[in-house]
Image (cartoon, helix red, strand yellow):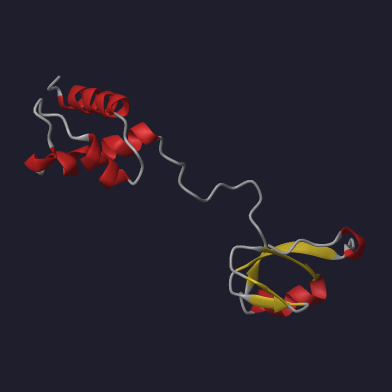
Amino acid sequence: MPQPVESVMSKDLKEYVCVDPVKHNGVRVLPDQPIWLSQKEAKSLLNCNAIAVPALGIETSEPELTELEKVLAVIPDVISNKDNLTGTGAPSTAALTEAVGFDVSAELRNEAWSAYQAAQGTE
């Protein structure tokens, strides 16, 4: 990600965020990356919505779920296929691992399974 060089920084430069790819000073800046421009340079790019003023202090993304929450979220789908169950009726760690995309330990599976059963009133 291109960063401004301290020696060429000026009080006249302001940080913007690219909405579309922008080529500036021979460097291609991709969407969601910062770009530092003078007011004059930014004017036409702002008018055509190629750049935007960054939002300050506003979190726009969803909070990241914990591994436990991710496992809990996939349990209903995993247990809907009886081939994914162990002899005790719990979902297999292999099936959960495949569903969430990270390694689910037996300990994490047991914690999630207990929480799931408690929420269902079937503990």
